Length: 321
Image (cartoon, rainbow, N blue to C red; front, side, top):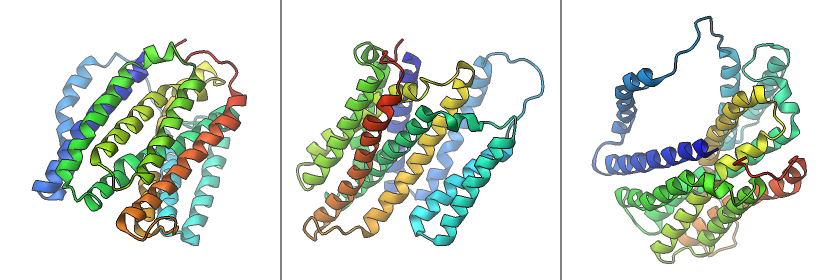
């Protein structure tokens, strides 16, 4: 599974590049220029096509309707988290029911209903949805806002703080094969989740402390997310038939992408209006309450993993096996 680690490492390096680029553009140029950055990927298409393996000729089927239904479910969920409209909630429930009905009767759907009868896989998706939403909520959203609001840092300086965190996460990802030889999947995920919960809670209770402490917490959480990716995915695939693992991995990654969007949505709502009256009515106290709410989401993922998933794991083999 070392290639999963290499994939994680490349993602973290890309995050460094994207963060630096975004911070520079929003500070020194018009933010609209951010939409031009993805055009750079077009230059790499010829190299990608050159090294792609040959595929067998024949008709290929793409389940466009199924993909659209998944997109509708994700969009309605995010809109509901933003507005809490009963109409949107009904739309989410309806679109989810239609999607489940569709994959139950469509023989060549991109994912079948059998995937959702696999209890271990479904529970893993739920845990991934919760825990990876906190990555967007804490690391990518709230962290940037509190640095600009509490510590009065410019966005270009904020982006510089992500460099050591992303590089450290890339290193952890590239070493995931060696980590796997020391820890089994359950242990690796447990250590990662504990580190995530701890980093968010420390950030909540140390609000206003030295900015270097927050840089260290950012490194800790980023490394934890990088270490968790492969073993959590491997856990969900333990009871999955070999022929279905490719589709399952794709759906797992789709779930993570949805989780990131959901994390941005609910953390933005927390920043705009959360008021638990647990901390002083100051800017620092407000962001402490926001982080406390995010830590509850991470803690719920940890509880689900320990008490529900552990009993479903058929063996305790290392995910490097």
